[in-house]
Length: 113
Length: 115
Image (cartoon, rainbow over all chains, first blue to last red; front, side, top):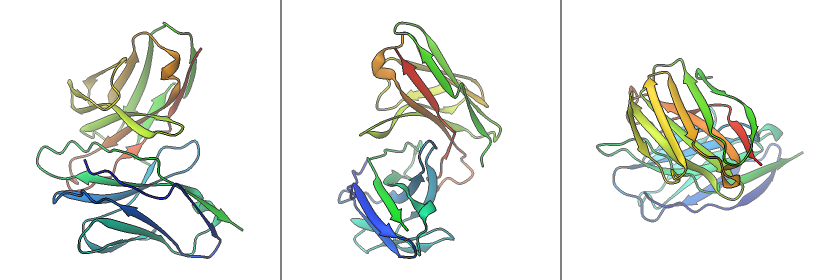
C-alpha cells in the first residue's frame, strides 16, 4: 500500500479556505485517494474520495494532478467546528480488495476565531 | 449515522485477564474491521472480517483474536490483556454495494485500560 506524507499540523482562522496537501509518490494504478476526518473522542468519518482531477461534495474538494503523486484537500470557509484531524489514505480497489485502510498520523487542523 | 455500536464503551481490567469487545451492526454489511488508536500511531488495523466465519489478520494482530458467527456481530478478544493493549478500539463496517468506495463507517469506540 502506498505510503502517504502530510503535514503534522496546520492553523487557520474562521472563514478562511484551508488546503491540506498529501504526497503519495508510490501510488498504484488501482489506488484511490481518500480523506477521513476525526473529531476528539469519535471514530473517523469519510469525507471524500477521488482518482484523478477534481472531486467536490458538500463538505470539501479534492484536487489530484495528472501524475497522481499528490493530492490536496480543500475546505472552504472553515469554522471552529472543522477543528479535527484529517487523514489522507491511499486505498487499493484492485481485485480481491478487502478495503483495508492504512492510517498515518494525519494533519491536526486548528481553526481559531 | 450508520447502525454500528460497540460495547462496552469503557473498561478497566487487570493484566492477564481475558477481555472481549463487541461490535454490532444493523446494516447487514459484509466487511467489518477492528482498529486500535494510540497517541502517535493513528489508527492501526488489528483484524478484519469479510463474511461470517471469514476473518484475517491486520498489521497489529498479535495478542488478539476475533470471531464472527453472524453477520451483525464481530468480537475482538484479548486472551490475556497486557498494559500495551491499553488503547481506544474502533470497529468499522463497509458494504460491498459500493465496491469502488473506500467509505467505512466507524463505531463510537471502546476505551480500554489495562492496569
